[in-house]
Amino acid sequence: MPEEPGAQSLLDQVAEAERQLIEAAGRERPDAEAEAYFDAVIAADQKIEPRDAMPEAYRKTLIRQIAQHAHSEIIGMQPEGNWITRAPSLARKAILLAKVQDEAGHGLYLYAAAETLGIDREELYAQLLSGRQKYSSIFNYPTVTWADVGVIGWLVDGAAIVNQVPLCRCSYGPYARAMIRVCKEESFHQRQGFQSLYVLARGTEKQRAMAQDAIDRWWYPSLAMFGPPDADSKHTAQSMEWKIKRYSNDELRQKFVDMTVQQAEVLGLTLPDENLRWNEERGHYDYTQPDYDELMRVIKGDGPCNRQRMANRREAVESGAWVSEAAAAYAAKQNVRQEAMA
Amino acid sequence: MTKNPLWEVFVRPRRGLSHSHVGSLHAADAQLALRNARDLYTRREEGVSIWVVPAADITASSPQEKDAFFDPAADKIYRHPTFYEMPEGAEHI
Image (cartoon, rainbow over all chains, first blue to last red; front, side):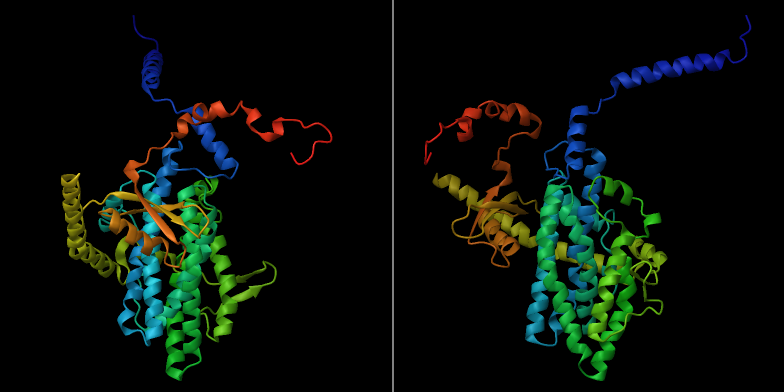
């Protein structure tokens, strides 16, 4: 009997339904109770803690963000570390050393927070070196004069603070606690930079020109630190729903511009933007957007210093390996000795 | 790179307060953990005493069993002083 037209496709649908039925039976059912608990904690604006059940995507997003943040602190030691041996006075050198040491500390708080999500420290280090995890694009720009150290403190750390203060209210407990610690220390970083620039701006003509030149070079890369515009930011909406992020990239960027204009006036130096002016209607400053194509190029690895930063990091890991090997050997020897005595 | 064990760090902020958990770090042995904890968590005089504990030695209750684990306390409201109604006129109690 010839099949009626369409019968085969109907049979196909039956077979497909049967296949789906078998597949669904074998599928792991999401734990509805755990999911409801997670949603309730987020809705109540409370903290998720390391051993709570959480959606896999939430865990992955946090690992990506916290790791990127930790890597930025560690790589961020390089541009400023470049000036430790050439700081203009002992006082400036001591301050810079303390600041770079803080950055190392911030990286370690954040690595520890990331590890509570079940990823290994060694794995995080490996992903930085292999380029699978990123760090902030800003640290791929060179520090060519002493004034750059001041501008990093004022603008780069200033932008970082605007970004990080809302993270103190992040829904993931260990990240929020690490950020509170970081933000308390970060304020010294910004102030020492501002004060250093203030001195240069009131110094010789050459010092003043050096300070202005540094601002001219760092202003747009600092604006780009807030990430792509909201329309192109692929993680923002979900992260805000999970209360990891509290404000969008553009909101934070605007906040930074609004705060910085007055500070530049106090310094008596100019932000390199002809279109920068107060917009009465918006209640904000209008400003020129940074070059986001450049941001993407630098993130992808093609900034002025990407290769140098990674080469230095790799070199530090390799040439420092003997220290942790020696410490481990000593610990093992002590253990044997203690067991022998017991 | 050598794999160092994880240590949990507890700091007593001031005399008279108890030690509180502040974070964790990796170190080869207890002495190094203690010294690293000093450099990492008390750079600005945040503490007067530090404990380091191997993370592997901590036994924790499971959040999944939270309800069953803590339930026995829920129906013993007579452990709270407010359970007892005091007669009119009783003072200092």
